[in-house]
Image (cartoon, rainbow, N blue to C red):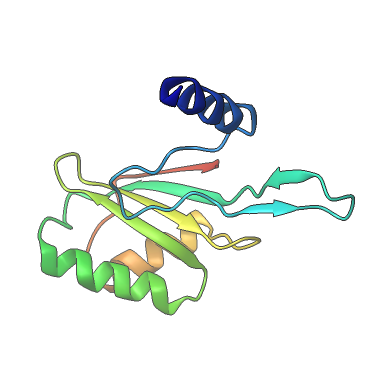
Length: 119
């Protein structure tokens, strides 16, 4: 009986395409409803940035603080092993390559690459 309930709930979650939580600072977009009452998942812009200079926890704090000061960022998830940063923006917000590069270089770091996408 418990297994049947579990499978029913699991199937329901899959039908709504809701992601299960993962251990990460990044958060999934909040579910929302449109004017007709239909369930929709908001899509947010994200950037994956590579910087070989941001290599320690203090660097991450400085970089994250500067991003948060823009008022555009929902979350920042660092991956120090690959020197990557996954930056998710608030709904309707974004940042150009030039804006991000200026922010990073003003902090004294360099940018190796920038990729854009939507989640």
